[in-house]
Length: 72
Image (cartoon, rainbow, N blue to C red; front, side, top):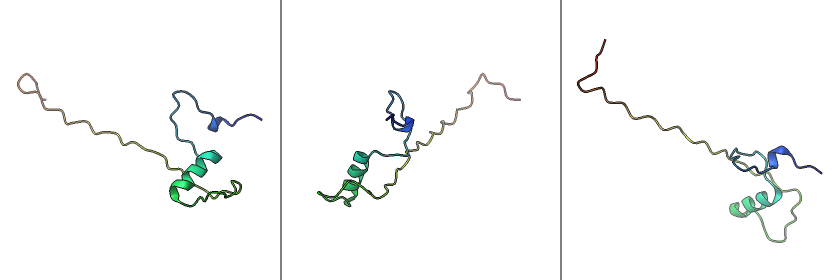
């Protein structure tokens, strides 16, 4: 069976995936405290995948030219 393109890990690809593997879902459930040891890994509840969005930094205001600049 072939692997879906969204699940492949490519070098340099840092795009957020909307699908987690079973192991990733179990790890996330353990963090949330809803996973118990001995629980069956089938029929896992949905786990929210948050996208990380970086805000662009605002450029510092450029200082107007002190003496040599001409303004129209």
